[in-house]
Image (cartoon, rainbow, N blue to C red):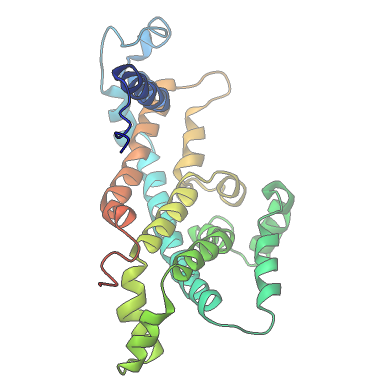
Length: 280
C-alpha cells in the first residue's frame, strides 16, 4: 500500500506564507484606517508614509462622538439595517419555502421576473424610484429606505433561502406530518431549526448590504436628522478640505455594529445545515 502523501516542509511553509500574505493584504486597509484615526491632525501628512504615527490621540473619536451629528447618523443606520434585514429575511424565508416545496401555475414566470429585477443597473431606476417615493410623501424618512432596501434585497435573499430549503429532505417534513403535525407545525418545529444557518446567512447579507448602501440614501434623504452614516461621512468633506482624522474615526466606529452582528450569528453560520437531523 502506498504511503499517504505528506507535503514537504518547504511546501507547508509556502502555504502558510501565502495565507499570511493574503490576510495581511486584506487587513491592511483596516489597519491604515485605524492608524489615521489615531493620528493627530498636524501629523496626518507628515507621518503619511509611516507605518505608525509618531504620536497618538483619541481627539478624532471624541469629536466624532460628542461634537458632530455622526451618532445620529449611526443610530439611523442601525434602525434601517436591522429593520431591512428582519423584514427581508421573513419574506424571503416564506417565498423560498413556497418555491422549494410547492408547484403552482406561473412559478417559472415569477422566478424569471425576480431574476430580471437583478439585471437592471441602479442608476437606471433611481429616477423612477425617487418619483414614486416623492409622490407618496415618503422623502426624508427612514421608512422609505427600509421599503426600498427590502424590495431590492428580496429576490437574492429568496433564492438563497430556497437553496437551503432544497437541501433539506422532504422526508423529514412528511414524517412530521404523518406523526400528526400540520404543515405550519412541521415548518416551525422541524424545518426552520434546520435552516438557521440559511437564516443567519441571509440576515448577514442583507444587513451588510443595507448598512453600506449609499446611492438610495443619498438620493432619498436630504434632511440632516434622517441621514444614515454613509451619507453622514460626506459631511466631513468641505469645499476646500477633508477632515481625514474624523472621517477615519467615524469609519472605525461604523465597523462596530457589523462586527457585533456577525459575532452573535457566527455559530449559526458555521454549523452544519442538517447536522444531527438524520441519525443512523
